[in-house]
Amino acid sequence: MATAAVDTRHWTREEYEQLIEEGYFLPGERVELVDGVIYEMTQQKGYHSEGVTLVDYALRPILPDGVFVRVQMPLALGVDSEPEPDIAVVPGRPGDYSPNHPTTAELVVEVADSSIYHDRKRKGSLYARVGIPEFWILNLAKRHLEVYRKPRGGAYTSRTILRAGDTASPLSRPEAAIAIASLLPRR
Image 1 (cartoon, helix red, strand yellow):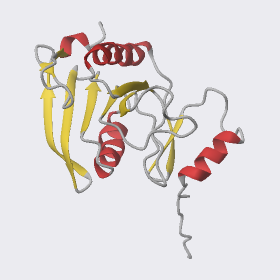
Image 2: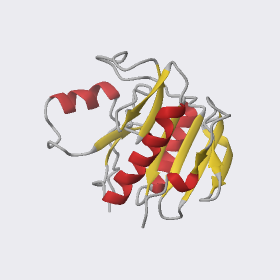
Image 3: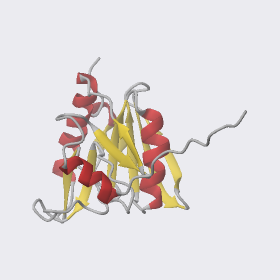
């Protein structure tokens, strides 16, 4: 019996943006392009949304001049990736990225409940490969913050787990302290 080879379609960022422009996806459909694959993202539940809001609220007042926060907006990372991280701290000021998306970030934060594998393996690997110096995962299931730093060879070489009694400091503001407990939504 003969077998057929089954391949997946590898999409470029340009093709993906054209699909969006042509209305291929339903209004409100949440998708993102990571390493040439279009992933459908699950709908946000209140717990996830609250985690995003808490991280945003904690980061904004401590960031230095010259960077700003983008919430759930695309990053143009190479020819075949356009992820939409929950939080991205990018260089510049609001208005600097019209009509294009930022191509880098100083810090990316993903809030993960059911998406932990996708965030940690697929997106984390991408963020490391493009040289984003710092990547955080607010792990809602385990109620901790995973801090990844020192990207090298497509992976982060430093991983720290911080729990409710700990504090975190972004690389750009090492003197600032964010209480991990303040990032965790109430149960």
